[in-house]
Structure formats: structure tokens, C-alpha cells
Image (cartoon, rainbow, N blue to C red; front, side, top):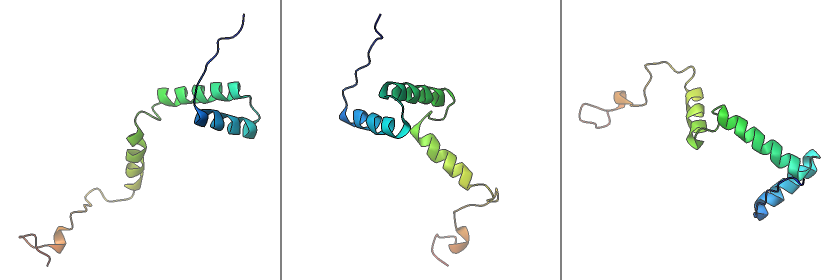
Length: 85
């Protein structure tokens, strides 16, 4: 019995798959299977829960070493009326 086929009509997808198949030595079918399996695994692991999650992770990483009471308010530069001192 022949294997079911997946048909994706995208020039960009085809071009990427061909280029990666050449670089990796995998067939385009195997490459797509592995890419989909990896993406599925990443989603299940929460790696791509939302596109902004990567931004929040970077922001949290950038806060390491910053004292907990540090702010960016710069209140010391302004008087009680909000004017520069």
C-alpha cells in the first residue's frame, strides 16, 4: 500500500526544504518529518508557547545581577513638581 502524501504548495517551503536537504544529506521527506517532530517536541516542552515568550525570557535574563530595589524611575533627577533639578 502506498504511503499517504503530504502536498504543500509553497515555493518558499520547497526552496527551504531543498536547501536543507542538500546541506544535511537527508531526503526532503525525512527532513520535513524531523522538522515537524522537533517543532512538536518544542511546543510540548513550552519552548514556543508564544512568540513573545522569547522576549520575556531575554528580559528576565538581563535582570540577573540587578538589585531587587533598582528602578528606572530616575526620581532623584526631578523635584517634587516633576521638573529637572
